[in-house]
Length: 165
Image (tube, rainbow, N blue to C red; front, side, top):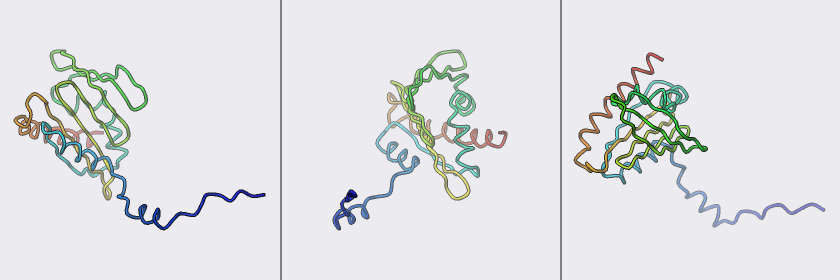
């Protein structure tokens, strides 16, 4: 005797599935998150490299953070459990900052008690769209112009690193 298998889809279920929005890519998710965080500035850029090449660099926080961020001299992963990490960065004079990090392909969210950093990437045409936000909670909206300039520099340093890679 054969089992009847799953019941056929109902017309209502099929209609609901057809209306379901497409899944959000990491860049779109980061835009939505940034819109909900009043203290962050967000910028995007399309790089003429594959997703794998871009994320292979950016997602390697120990290698990329000191290159991207002028104020960081070192980054080290202290703990890792799946896509959750604890990362410690040190500035030029050795002062540490610890971040709780969620890291997976195309997505990085770094949170510290004083602020947030987000990075996301998604293939776009022959290249890769990259989005990046940063902000300090104590500065609120007042810090956005400073972080906007800082992020513009970060995006340029990523481009230079990809050329050298």
